[in-house]
Length: 160
Image 1 (tube, one colour):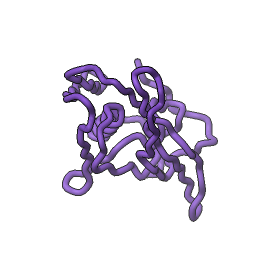
Image 2 (cartoon, rainbow, N blue to C red):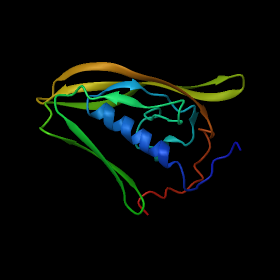
Image 3 (cartoon, rainbow, N blue to C red):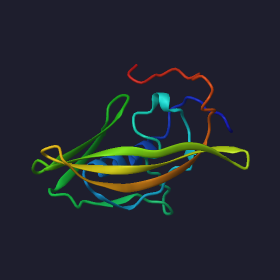
Image 4 (cartoon, one colour):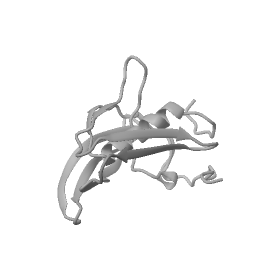
């Protein structure tokens, strides 16, 4: 209804977001990914860049990736009393590491509605710390559901 509230929910989105983040950090090739159409919360509580998620909607929108890495992987997910956890297990150490970087971030107005836009890139680094490549992985646009200039009114409840 056009307002931000605090409530329990979003479990499936949290899982698809976590799987996307894990796929990007394992060197996988993303075959199908759909971005969220809204930006629901300000950056003050964000732990990953805007647009670093994937949404799913049964039978219409899916998230798929292929392991193109140098080792077999097993992805384990589990819940504790409060958090979703995800671990990537590999059959041998990786010779490269991956990080995600936000680029070209900006806000803009279209027909009186405020949006934000960015691109994400995956940076591949060798075991000796040399950057091997930078590849664009996502272009994101999301309608803002908050005023980015307003002070934050919601308490940060992470870790409580």
